[in-house]
Length: 304
Image (cartoon, rainbow, N blue to C red; front, side, top):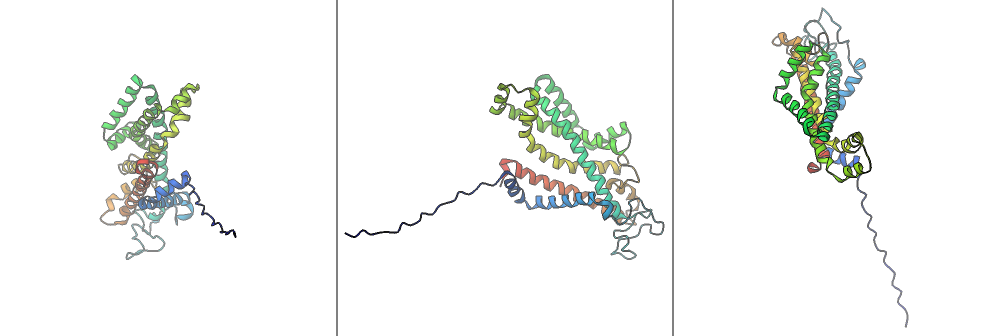
């Protein structure tokens, strides 16, 4: 009997899909929020503008010209391409001052967040690990700070220390400090009861190692989100202090100070108030949108 040779069909091999890496997974979750991507783009543009301000600004921020007081923007009658967004009451170019103001305002926001974040992490770790009287003392102080209106507290601190950019930054850092302390403490309390902390403690890890090597990296996600949102709060509060004359002092090209210098000309020259106000609005909105995207990407409950 002839043997029937049947060709063996090649069985299809199903390749296992390679799971995306952490960075790719983060970007997929982040980019699903189109507003967050737009905010990230605007923040990146603002950072580039601040970094390359000396090359982008058409004039020096403090350069005055007595022949062009309150000159309107280019598209308005009487405007000039030399001063695209017009000039202020003493002939300084608005566009140049906005570009240099991005450098100052963003530096204030980032510096305030870095300072309050560093102090808040330390206090939160101490409160989460020490518990007892130490925790109660730290958290009651934070609660007292939170019960006071933030801008009013900042004004009081600057009034005590004296007007100036550094004192304004310190005041805003104190105002936003409780948020980082509370977030860090809550995250630490949730982490210290987990098995990896118990294993590290049994293996002989000291308190500082437990704090900064074991627990803190696992508390980073909510702190990153709060820090991104905190930059917008710091910019807004610093601008408010500058507008009240308690922050950056003239002739500094800080956006809030520019608003304060221009408020008496609001009816005669709309551009001297409108453009600094729009700069504050765009920066604050961009950081808030980016913070929302970071929250969606870093919080497992909100991943899409």
